[in-house]
Amino acid sequence: MAYSASARPGESFPGDSVLSARVFADPGQKIFRQEAFNILLGEEGGSQDRPLFIQFAANDPDALLTSAKIVEPYADAIDINFGCPQDIARRGRYGAYLCEDWDLIYKLINTLHVNLSIPVTAKFRIFSDVEKTIKYAQMMERAGAQILTCHGRTREQRGHKAGLADWEQIAAVKKAVSVPVFANGNVLYAEDVERCLSATGADAYMSAEPQLHNPGIFYTPSSDSTSSQREEQWRRSTHPPLASVALEYLSIVRSLKTPTGSSAIKAHLFRLFYPAFLQPENHDLRNRLGAISWQRDGLEGYEDICKEMKRRMDKAMEEGWDEVFPVDEKTGLKRVPYWLCQPKVRPPAVSSSSKKEQPPKNTTPSAPLAPTGAGPIESALKPTTPVVATIGDGTSGTVVPVALDDEVERQADIAVRDATSALQARAGEKRAIDITGSPVDGAANDDGVYQIEAKRPKLQSTQPS
Image (cartoon, rainbow, N blue to C red):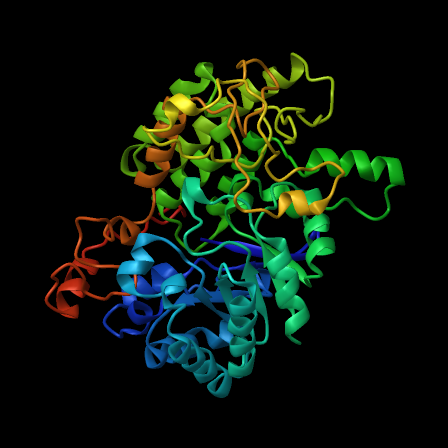
């Protein structure tokens, strides 16, 4: 997943999506290497792509060093992912599933620290015991990590069980180490960045998934505006019109020499359009996007859908939205109209045995999720705080983050899942490979993995032939 970090809203730098060090280092994987990070065309890691952190998932220090050396001239730092909690990381033994092997983590970091001319950084998740988290962070600092990104959730907190990130633990890490600390977790809106930095003392905030739904999260208005103009501009521009953002994204795709995979385009558009796709009148566009074919429709097919979405969203805006993002009293979340970019908030999982015990829909939750108003910050730091997702009335201005129609959400999530890259698709439960290239579930050797990987379709060029 791509990510960005910011010391203040508007001051950000990009990071690349996580790359498999083992596969990237393999000289037989040149096609994968160019698809993952294209060096030949000079755009990735070029002057317009800096400063840039490149993140690797790894469990082999030698493979990690080989991969890092390849991209060293094109990056400003190499980041090691010790935070991924997904099943694919468990099967491949990387990410958050290395957290018990401190000797290996030390060696991974230190190998890069000693042998690279650029800094090595590390992203990790907390333990339930804050003292263990502090010792974990200090070990990474001793190994040579020059920036630590602390995600304030444990390895078990993921998906619908994510809960709230613990900012108090991030603050404890910041006090215990001397290197810069980036915070991660609980930021849904641009104004949350300042709250997080104030509460944790962190040097910057790192965002991953929220900015895929709302690229405006780090926006800040120009300094030459008056105070009142800047406030109004900031409030509106941190939630830009989703169709306009989508069209701008496609214009960038068209301008690049570096090919962009059609699956990546589709996944980005599904994330941007998620709130609009919850509206029944836009289900036809959702279905068109799901069925689009690069071979048949090309980039123009995506552009046609985005243009039609813009026409509909412009009409919806004209029909009325008088207030500017009021806070919903039931949830503590901003009521952002569905035609603007905004975060997607997952409702908590409800087990079949406890469904009868759940409060009825439209019930006030016992505590707000990532509250945006004033109040003691401690109330936002309890990862076990129960939150009840409510169902909105479906009218204009409904609270999209919690107005979750189950069937629409399910279909949209399936579409996004199916639109992910071929590498991720091959790492499913029924496959014998994972993102590190390690054989699992009975795979005999790495040759089998690489033979499968070599069959990946080439990315389509967006340039005219």
